[in-house]
Length: 135
Image (cartoon, rainbow, N blue to C red):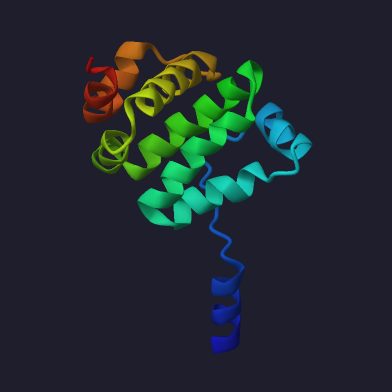
């Protein structure tokens, strides 16, 4: 039994919760570049703040259409890990990165199947929105 647990730990496969949507267009764009979107997301879920920062940086592998799906996943991830933690991560970003994250979150909110207004994003992630919208 111990061997099974050790093996799972070595695989490093964190489950992606059902509350986090993964859009096929974004997965396809990563695959086109030889990358694995779900692996990047699992890294964010498993490896603390640095994993989330790496996931945010991976948005550079998407174009506008893939960025919309990335935004949906990022919004879901932010809600999953909580506003306190995500706002702390956002606060650690350079101003250019903060602007990118804010655009991704807004795009994700607009692209969701259940439309979420910018005001709703601010209600769900108030600390994050405050940090990302400071000028």
